[in-house]
Amino acid sequence: MSVKEATGNDANVQSPEDATAEGLDPAAKPAKAGKDDSRTDMVGKALGLLVLLGDEPRGASASELSRRAELPFSTTYRLLGSLTRDGFVDYEPEGRRYHLGLRIFQLGQRVSNHHGFAGTALPILRRVTDQTGEATILSVRDGQHHLTVNKVDGPQTFRVTSDPGHLGALHTTSVGKALVAFAEDGERERLLGELPLEPLTSLSITDRNAFRAEIEQVRRQGYAVMDEENELGMRAVAVPVLNSQGVAFASLATAVPVFRLSMDALLALVPLLQAAASELAARLPQR
Image (cartoon, rainbow, N blue to C red):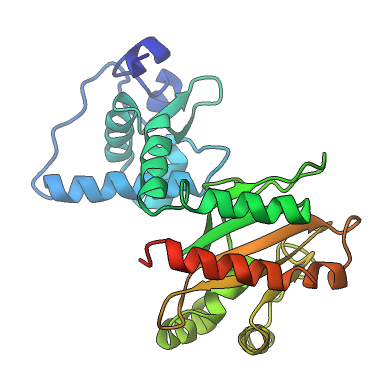
């Protein structure tokens, strides 16, 4: 089904109320781009809007995106219209909010397949979950976040909510700590100095010296833990997936609800995760 068929229109992706509120005629044609809006510049702005939408799982209005991107509303409105027509963005008329579209998911799946995270990694993750009975998660670093690229749920009813495509904090998660601890030396120092240490629970590390000490401990012991720092009621252990230079290009974790496994029982799974990480390192492209 085309975007036009799904939405019932092809150009009026912004509600009349939104456009009128911003002083625009919703029936008017988009203004032509000025000299400052070169094709390359507009592509960059459109990509910036997609990145912002990726950080908003509940979506965002055109006005909110305009403010966050520091773009004129007319420019934001025009770009969102183009992105919606091409399927990169979906528009929700009821809430007047935009969301990432199916086209983005399709591209993401192709990237995952290209890097081997879907095909090559999945059997290994399944084998770990078969042995632990718990969720196994594979993540990579995406700037100042970790990105879940694959996950296999356990058979239990209570499951982990970090699905593929999820962006999470580095300082409050076991996968994130492993990625920071085993980053290249210069990059690790930059992250230690610049990561925003915002609390997600009362147990989150927010002191920079304490975070540095935590990362040093992760490097010494070869694994990282999360004990209700990212989400109350959940704990996890993660190991790095290392390239030939000893730098993490991914991290592998087992995550469980606190009522099901103690920390000691979770740490007993580290050798299993390390063996799986070594297999992943040998099979995955180290990009």
